[in-house]
Length: 145
Image (cartoon, rainbow, N blue to C red; front, side, top):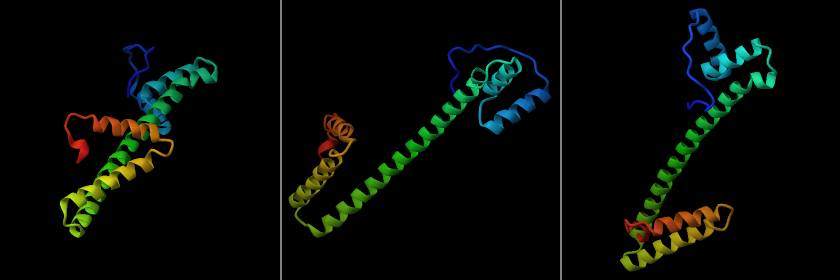
């Protein structure tokens, strides 16, 4: 997890009991050791509660974003793999039925065009148009297959 920009490294000595207590508190609240120590020190210094808890809140937000972002990436990758598998299975099934290669290629291209057109009709349309444009402009030449 990245550090806040306004933090500085400081070497300090703590008893093992205090380290264990702070770590237990950090684990209980799902925050970093540093955020827990800073917040607990701020509470002990009788700082306003919103100021004292700011490091804990920031640590929680960062942790949540990181875990959800990782989950989202895994879901997207899973969707890509599954859609590729489904496209290949559908293509194989059509190829078994349509023996003429030119007719098969026309059917496949029409199916892709129709799928892209349907995706671009909703709110993610602009993103999809960008993705399709980037893919068609790619130098590997794989965009028309």
